[in-house]
Image (tube, rainbow, N blue to C red; front, side, top):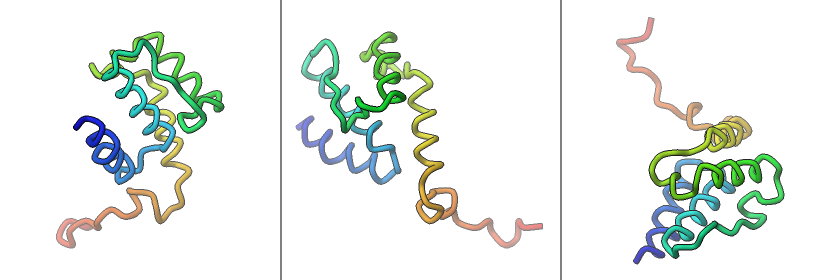
Length: 108
């Protein structure tokens, strides 16, 4: 059951909310590792293992503890990489560009 949730529901949620694919794969790998009682997640290219910034995220989160991730203790690199990913999206894909306009009675 947990594999179905992780592979379908959570993965779809992350995609629908424009999560950086490498960060999404990293999170899913960390969850699988925690469920399987593995000591450390095993990262490959799809997790950003060949990218210095993602590799730094992996190292810093390992220092804090991967299990701490699920207690809300994320290193700041998670948000920095996600913000950089969103900033690189084309304008039509940026969630703030597609925001609903303010109600007409509130505009100055």
